[in-house]
Image 1 (cartoon, helix red, strand yellow):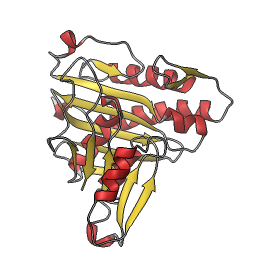
Image 2 (tube, helix red, strand yellow; image 1 turned 90 degrees about the horizontal axis):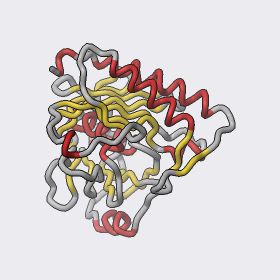
Image 3 (tube, helix red, strand yellow; image 1 turned 180 degrees about the vertical axis):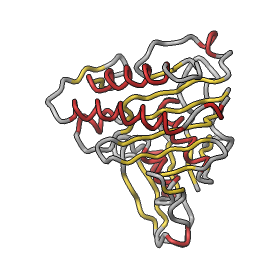
Length: 253
């Protein structure tokens, strides 16, 4: 089934959504707040429409689970073999702050595992993509771009918006000969920095949703890294319960 999908078709859809996001980004825009107090803008809605339309026009017909789409009860989705997992605008807080660190995330999940992912940062015009057994890429360059020996410091990615006491304690407990260097960036770009070899580790000991990680998880897998549940060190799984909330996790290469 995966061989019927051209990854570049998904890249094109992500970039079309990114273009719509940038049209809103360059203007004054209103911000709504959802029940969980997370921000929502016209850009989220427009990007979601473009992505859903694009995916529905592909030759494969898979259900879509999107942050901004309709909810599907677990009783229905637990039977899905393949489905698209979408965050049309990951890092809406970064979008509202206008710092450019937001992404379009499109993943294909097979049962509980990401097998394809596209992460596009439209303000930075950077695109990462990966497909199972075909490698991971950043704008056409095969990942990783750097290895451990090419990094002079031990680079730790942390969230600018969500640094928790637990994350700080995890960072403090890392025992390494190299000097530790903290890198802060928004959205799923954090995972992508590990995938490309720009960073060594990203501990996320705070809440995330499955659509926040699915696409970048596929990319880090294909780059030779791993994204594991922090409690049991097992690979993070998807669509396994009614809640779409991830366990705390650690990304490392």
